[in-house]
Image 1: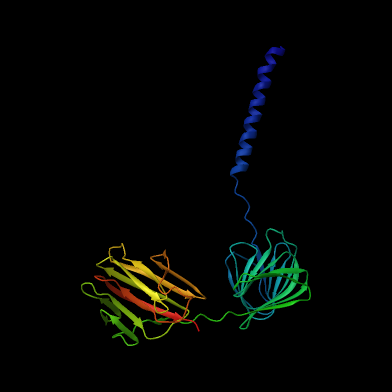
Image 2 (image 1 turned 135 degrees about the horizontal axis):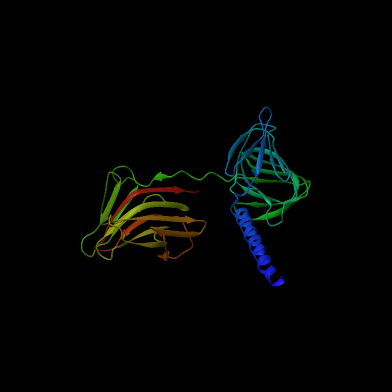
Length: 315
């Protein structure tokens, strides 16, 4: 009899195991519960509502953002901000907020950015304002790490301290490099140059070279344009500082023959690219960066056309 009972017991065990496997399988395929919204908006006269990452908000004075851990950000006036893709990241565009931040994981602090600074918070109280003059941080408790976006410098700001980060000056506006017709403001020093409906073309016959130089003396500047280069060695030059330094631009490999060029001379550094590929600056006079003419140069047998050229300059 005992020998006959074993198969029955074994059968019951297999059946129980099968039922358990089915139960586990159902648990695995059951949809996970939706994660709660990382922030909730509380405003007078309106129901609470959860906010999705990436939400852009305009808050009236007194409106409150509350995180699941109890962290609160209260609008001190009209505020414009945006929630980041990550739950505890916020961009403050305008206005001020009073923050009471519960302790955060050291590796995942609350981060609030403005146009001038980034504030990383583990747990503290402070007021942060973004105004026309820049960013202002006033600490009440604890400390935060403030990083200046202009130079990457950072510092710990402790209770009782106030730090102001001045607004960065506005970038200069782009201006057309050439007039709509003609070559006013430019000296065709070598070769023959003309401007037809904003496209400047130059070159020379035989062993002669072609050079077009600006009458304006330029220092810190940024140039973008398109070049079409043909003939000869299939390359042209853009020169800065009256041939102090230059970059050699190769002809395009695309069917339309145009190559997109960007050149920047800023704070003693010259950078350039052609269709996104970096160009290596080469010395003409090779002196320290200096003011001087901007010039386009075509070697013997080369014809170069310049289109969509624009420039912006710094004092």
